Image 1 (cartoon, helix red, strand yellow):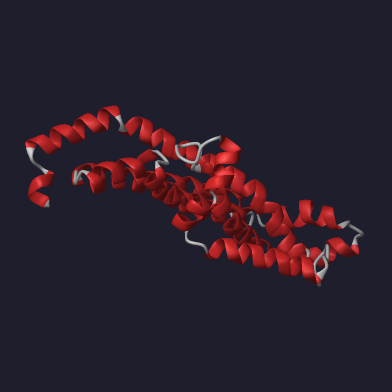
Image 2 (cartoon, rainbow, N blue to C red):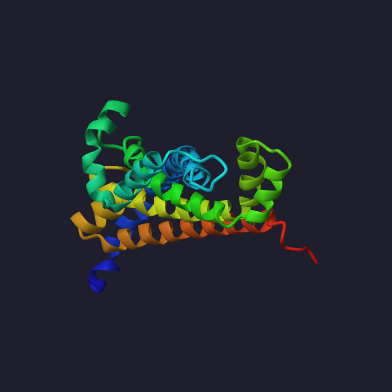
Length: 235
């Protein structure tokens, strides 16, 4: 394997692919990852809030059957492996975007796979809020929506940003797997050249680029989380 990776032919082909195909693949990967993360947050954030606020002792108690249904749906979606989920949602993907393959089509299964994960991350962040702060807001006559929007969410911003970073890096990994069904991006290049054509050098370059993108997302997320943490005192 190693002796075939660095032949003159392999190096020449990898250089050509690097110049002509990798720029678009990197763009597709970032585009799909960011867009899927935004949609997952739009769906997962309110769901995560309901999981905490809707409890029996929460600020906005919901009927127990409703909470049970929400938890079951989230657990079911989280338990399905992503590759199987992509196949299961083919009809829904085709209904929404008109096709079940391609870069845009991969966003649908990514969102469906990610929003339950985001909901659990939001739930975890909100549970870190000091209950004394919530009780103080309740004693001052704040409504449930005011407590959620002005107390719980603002107090959990650093944790929410950290968990959003976890979510976006997880979705990035899912987006690479979507290359199996023609989802585009670096995942498709790695599969098409590394797996089907045994061009391992191209696959290694795709993996390295994926790692770099993950590091960029992680660094930006960590920086934002630290800056938003009021508990950290600047020297």
